[in-house]
Image (cartoon, rainbow, N blue to C red):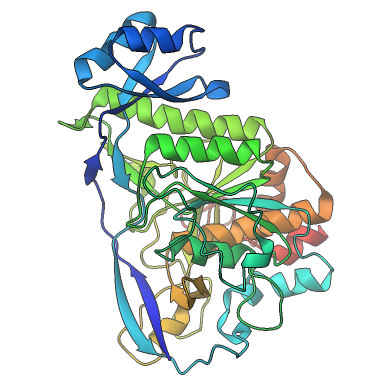
Length: 419
C-alpha cells in the first residue's frame, strides 16, 4: 500500500498570513473596566486570559487599538505565521499491511532504551501530555484510547474541531503515546494521556494568541507536559507593514510569559529546536519562538544513515551551546533517493494510517514521552526537578558536558526511570 513520507525542508518562514483586525493587549493586570474601555475606543473584547494579563480584542483600525497604550497596556497585532516548516510529500510503496506490527520500524525506541523502561513496568500511566499542534486525528486506533476528549479543544476559530487533517499533530501524538495494543505502532509512554490542543490550522499556520491560549488551556486542564513541535521566526527589528520592532518584542514576551506561567504551575514545556541547520546563538536579527525562550526544554534532533550511527546530529537540526537542552531521535534522509532512505526517519501515526517523518518536531515528543515516564514512575515534581532529572540521566554525547548539538545529552528513558 502507498505511504506518504514527510520531508522537512530547511528554510526560514516569515510569511504573515493576516491578523484580521485582531489585537492582543497585555499588562501586569488587566483593568476591571477593560471591556468598557475597549468599547469606548471603538473595539470589541473577544476573550481574556486573566491569569496572564492578556486579552484579545478586535478593532477596525490600528490607531483605535493603539489608544489602549495610554492606560499602560501593551498592544500588538495578533499576527498569523506558519509554525511548521514547508514540506514536500512523496508516495513510497512500502509494502506494509495495516494488520502488521510496525515496532520493527521504530528504531528510535531502543535507541533511547524505552523498551528497557517498559520492562521496569513504567509506561506513562497517570501522566498527562498536551500536544499543541494541528490537532489529533482521533479516529486512529493507536491513539484514540489515550485521548482525554473532554480536555481537548481547538483554538483555531475557523476549525473548531480539534480533529487533525494535516497529520503533523497526529504523528507527534503517536510518538508520545501510541497505545500498546498488539498492532500498529507504540509510543514512548504508551499509557500516558493525550490532550489534543489545536493551535495551528491545517496549513500549519496559527496566531500568537492561539498558541498562548493553548498553553493556558493545557495548564487549566492539568497537563503535566506541553509538547510544542512548532517554531516561528520573528525579525527583531520588525517586518512592516505586519509588525514593528516593538510588536516583535511584545509578541515574544507574550509567549515567554505563557511558558513561564506554565512552569510556575508545574507544567514542563518541551519545544522543537527548528530545522534550518543554524546556530541559534548567532541569528542576529532573527529569533526562534518558542525554541529560544526560557523556562522550557529545547530539543535538537539526531538521526541515522542507513540505520547506523543513530546518534549523529541530524543534518538539518538547529544547534547552539546556549540554546539546546537535550537531543532526541528526529530521523534523517541523507540516503534519499536510494532504496530504503525513508527507514532512517521516525515512524508514527498520521491521518488514516502511519508515516515516516523527520524533524526536530519528531525529537521533541520523544523527550515529552520520557518526561511522562518519569512522572509515571516518581510522581508529580517541580519543573526544575523534572528538567534536572531528564538532563542528568541523558547520555552525554559529543564534547563532555554541555554540547552545541546535544545540549546535556541524548535522552535515555531507561536511565530516567531507574536513577
